[in-house]
Image 1 (cartoon, one colour):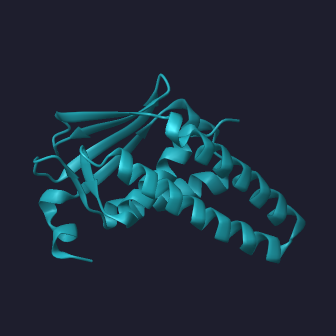
Image 2: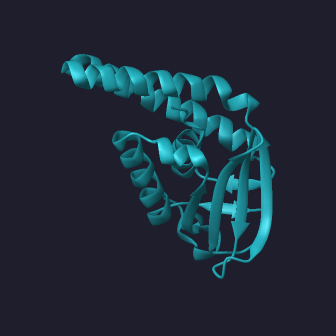
Length: 161
């Protein structure tokens, strides 16, 4: 990891997810969300424009849009970045299908199928991270691991029963 990634002025120290979808997560989805949030808080590179942090991020989905509400350590608003969810919809749908397939494979005890689904999920996370990085290009600078973890959290916010 480069020096910029560990610069305390360019990092998130806390991530807060807002949204009703979070109350409908399965135990496995909640574990994924919690792990992604913990990993993100432990190691990330997040630089919104020319602002210096560290930052607190309130991440939510409102009216079909992804909202990055960026705040300082005292939770005072600094900036908000809003992205249309449209470009992410097919990835989010595919992710939901993978989660459903994974749950079924676990229930049936099909280890080879579980491994194949996990590989597909990693590929989907990479696609989502690339898309997120592209969509935030001129708004928030991210490294790839940060984008992958944020994509996991976006998926958690977008889950439907």
